Length: 475
Image (cartoon, rainbow, N blue to C red; front, side, top):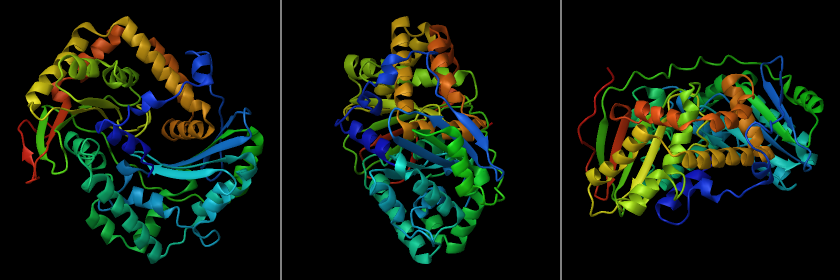
């Protein structure tokens, strides 16, 4: 799992760096193009075995970016197999009978490229970027590990230990323990797919046998459960021919039906208090249930998330940190932690994470926080603030699309969710059309107490979890 954003968020909490969006440099794409003036070229083809291929030509440099995304993520793993989606991401780097462990790294990194992978709620992706001369070897290697892996007990045990060590490093031995990413969804949602610990329970990981891993592979790692996207200095028809050459003979497999992830309505605010023996100052995590990704309200929600949280000019930073001084740091977004606010395919939250002075109470922070949301729902944002954040979001979107490997990743996810990549070209125009009145209406509809869950994480030895009142089961 790629943890660059986890690391940046934690550093932000400790006052070391700004939010990821604040670190992005302006690019020629973001500065040169406005909404509606540039479209990402993308052509798709579906192989006879069900694999969907997306090609986006960009001849600005002799390189390529490749992403192969599979329709299996945290949300889609079966009960009793928590953590399997992430565990299997690791297993995919353990080599195959024809390309032993380390071959992938030597081929790509030895030629100036790089490889990686990460698991999110609705997909697991593997990304490669390299000079164009490495394209054929890369396609061969990706096809080889889709055919089969080195399913050995030694490899399973090795990666099980690696995953469990990640949990110790990133959760058990860190201040706040990612409670805003793990515990908050677990309290805000009721169904297993949305609510379980995405890292996996140790008991499930420890119980895994090599037969379970092989079965997971055969169920989910199938060409008919994958989208392969390539962006860069390539020709579309040549890529289609190459992908057919390397992947076309891989037979489709029986992919399990996706679970029902739709949540029953939330009818009351849910509030909890947790102790944290490693934290120096208290932290408050607040999550609001968001509309479905395909709802017209979803883009408004993404923009609202940035209005509230993006940088020192954001509404919450100005009110809580600068003005009322009830917070030390504020961060958050829709689909917080896991990429952009547009790349999810099930229930998600608009999350606020607030570190506040230890001499204050949760109620002090919440009162100031609620005042910001109430003002947004009553008066809406100023036209200037809305224009600023909309322009920044479009700029960031174009900046990402300019980098071939990021473009391949975004195209693959859009195609995996919607069957075609056109969504990536619609988002900037939709952001540009959002009005202050739509923001005001969104805040009044979604940023309300019956839609939210709160966890107050206080610096104290954990003696179990105390229900602070207000939790109510789904009605």
